[in-house]
Amino acid sequence: MTAPDEIEPIRFEVVCELEAGMVRVHVVGELDLAARYVLPTAVRNALERHAVPSVHIDLSGLTFMDSTGLHDLISAGQIAAAHDAVLIVQGARPNVRRVVQLANLDHLLDQFG
Image 1 (tube, rainbow, N blue to C red):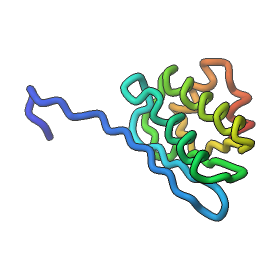
Image 2: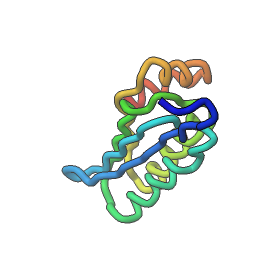
Image 3: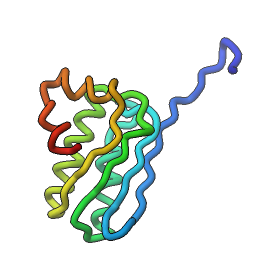
C-alpha cells in the first residue's frame, strides 16, 4: 500500500509474440488516453517484421478501456487489414465488452470473438 501522498503509476503493457504463424499481442492494464497509440503501434511494428495472416489480441489482462482505447483497438484492426491480416480479439472482460456495446459497435465483438 502506498502513502496518501504517493500515486501509484498506472500500469499498461503490450507484449507481442510470434506463435505458430501468427502474432499474439498481450494487453495488460488500462487502455485509455495515457496509453494512446501504444496498441496500434505495436500491431504495426509486429506486422512490419512478420508477414502473418492473423493478429490475436489477448485482452484478458485489460482491466479498463475507454473511448480512446476503443479507437486504438479499431485502428489496430485497420492496420491489420492494410497488411492483409485478420485481427482477432480474445478474452475481453465484461467491462471492456460494455464499452464496445455503449459505442454501438457490438458487431465487433462477434467479428473479433
